[in-house]
Amino acid sequence: MYNETMYELGANSSVIREIFEYGKKRSAEIGKENVFDFSIGNPSVPAPRAVDEAIKELIEKMPSTELHGYTSAVGDTEVRGAIASYLNKTYGTNFSANNLYMTCGAAASLTITFNALSEEGDEVILFAPFFPEYKVFASNAGMKCVIVLCDSETLQVDLDAFEKAITEKTKAVVVNSPNNPSGVVLSEETIVKMCEILKLKQKEYNHPIFLISDEPYRELVYDDVKVPYLTKYYDNTIVCYSFSKSLSLPGERIGYILVPDEAEGSAYIYKAVCGAGRALGYVCAPSLMQFVIAKCIGCTSDISVYKKNRDVLVECFEKNGFKAAKPDGAFYLFLKSPERDAVAFCEKAKKFELLLVPSDSFGFPGYVRVASCVSPEVVKRSIPAFEKLAKEYGLNG
Image 1 (tube, rainbow, N blue to C red):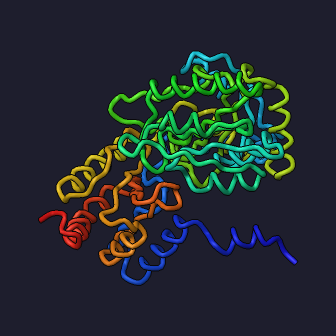
Image 2 (image 1 turned 90 degrees about the vertical axis):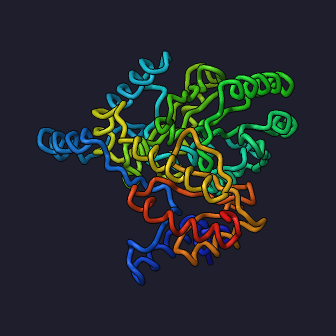
């Protein structure tokens, strides 16, 4: 009567979404100001003024039928050209509109890419901790997920474990830097060594292994940290990008896939991307937002707010005996659970109306994710709650 796999996905939503919905219910019961919801990566910083101005200008000057009509299935040519020009200027690349495919955000980018690459028996390597939906997207495309745990101290790629995990069946490796849920940025040293391993393995198995770079947090970095642009290090890189975080537009669902000419069989891969987009019903990303992006390319929201939130929370955790690495980017903190069972820790945190996400679904048990993209007021009001939670575990004396 129905697809049982799809039923299970629908009946059992992600842990992040479950806690988010609990937070909405709890807010209705006791008041939103009394709930400290750190569950979901929903930007609290407004979109830059340039976005509003672009929307107004487009509505006033562009014919409605054109503004709200279909673009080409792969996206408007001028929009894709504007993105390519920005990337070339910023990273010293040589892309054109023909390397880009506009999508409904990073989820669509990843889903399309997995489906475009997947052949029977293929494996994809995920570095834990990872965004849980990777497993959903990849598995639904028919790929087997192979999990490689990152170094427990640095959360950089464990290169020895990575090399051992690559087999003849490995088709792709997913990299997410800055990382969700840890905020860690992969160092250039890590990237170089990882790419060296991939190049050797490609020769050994005589077939390409693709690096899928998931980049919704690329611009969200602090303290002058640099995020290496992976196409400069490894030819067989495919970039999946979203403007959801950089421009605070998560609900607008706009992003792109980049297939560089340097990638092996790039013309065929691009056509496979087009075919996967067609088969999945993802052709023609939202037209209005495509035109907005072309006018706002290179702009970002005020990420200083996220940096301040990070610093306040890191200070709070250190003062109260919690252990958490100071993230270099994104807007998450990865907090070590004071007890082995991170789910139990999150349940105890609810006693103080703190909504945190256990790391089990991120493939890295024993931690919790704290989404610090809330307003500074929420962070400030949450400090006493974290102090009480620490006392429950005898962490702050």
